Length: 286
Image 1 (cartoon, rainbow, N blue to C red):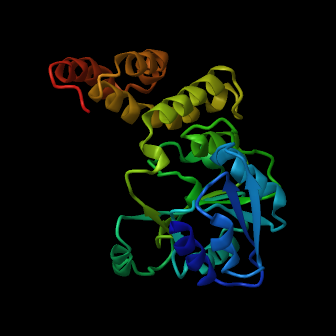
Image 2: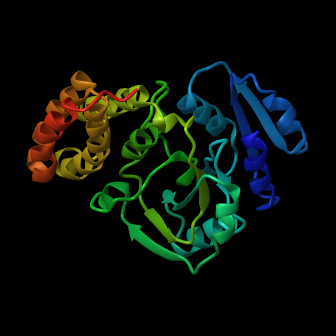
């Protein structure tokens, strides 16, 4: 079970100040037994198929530390992750939001080539101020102040991590850890991000939230928000066209057309019609 490897990676970062909380979202693979092997210090909570956002919220409410780090059950911390986080917090005067960088892997052996490097940071006034940079964001990359108000969206969707970050957008102090890698991100066919249906639910949720002015920052921060949202829009639009899912792809393209025009994303705007024609003459993927 991948969870055992995840918990093992946390135990290697052992520190008496760290509490570990496992939330089981209605699994049927004996998760509680796996957790029990790591001792009573790990808290085990259960919910019934409410989705990853609700699971993270439950863990958030149960936590007592000043900061919360999230780690999906198929990802791992690296031996220096905790030490890196602690040094970054002190060096950056305890920001509200820290995002690390993931080492992507399929086989465990690939992680043997990942080594600790000197810390390199980019500091921003808040998350929205980082919009120009293509910072990969996932729940396993996050370290956040527990006292801050935002919570994860409970709809069972992808892109809930970006939705969280956008609602978190103006909390003071955002840090991107460029080096070293702070976690291992496991790539495999069953990962939730491969589910295009959930991805479209999530991306359309982001568009709805922005259109309804539910993200912080008002009109003066709109350009930064749509920069972040449209960066997440483009890959699923193209993938939908590749899979001949014309309605979903074209709908999202149209919904965000004005934003892409505002940002002058001409390459994407002009490429989509030609890609649609090209994909139309290809065999539909199975």
